[in-house]
Image (cartoon, rainbow, N blue to C red; front, side, top):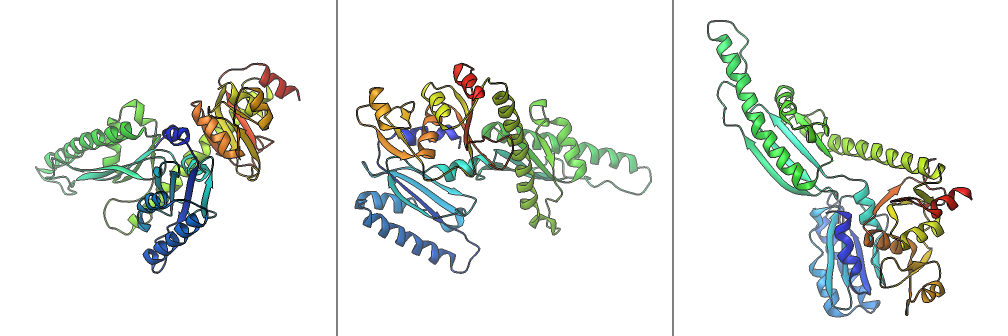
Length: 377
């Protein structure tokens, strides 16, 4: 999933029903607790006036408790249609059962900005297990490579007339297997737009794999300790992979905030504060919308049918020609405007000195008086 895949969800006609339910599996009677949680959700939706067809459609999209740590479902009440149903890898801070003019997508955006598409390779001298993950940490495809050369793959330690022949055969077998592994890796990496290739397993085999990767993918490689086989280390591999992804995301976030702070300091392609961000979104000028993790949750904005129609007051939108402006949660309106104008959205730590000082900021596609005015304040 890409953030911009959410654009059709946001462009649908509301009102929207958003449900976010905890679905942890590592608890006793997880399935029964999950079913009970959904019964309570459906009862609450009925109390909120959501009709039976919409409730039925949402119930049908609840999935299984084992699919993730939380389940997010968004439906439009006007036509009883589920617009989004996905499992998240992190437990929610709070359950959401909401009926409003806009969907609550911040939990999904939060998850997607903490993950990146990546490929994990578990390799040994006989082949590899290659898995592709999207930016919600879901496995989208898997390939098991079984090497075509499986004889004499273990290098012998002794001497003798056949020693060098066996050594060469083993090396050639590893190299041939690496070709097949690389083919699978690059296919899946292209498929998900991988930002990271995480290699785990036999050091010699991974050496051949790295040698054969094209430049496009070789620069994205990181290795973590572990093995493909059941030697006890495999239980630690998922944690180590998650740590590698988190470290990559942290570096990307620091780079983004560094760029933002530099542009803001120079009064060029960055703005800080709600008013200037709204002005930039009205002009489809935003490249990346930055929302800090401590941004006020209760604030609201006004919006119209078009993503660029947003303002801090309904009167302003009326003056701009919007006949019937609506009021919605500030973050939901900002996310809708950003994705509707092909901008990216990034949640960033509010405690970082390079983060937006006023909780909301943006890097811009081009500089104009908006950026200059913001720097002058």
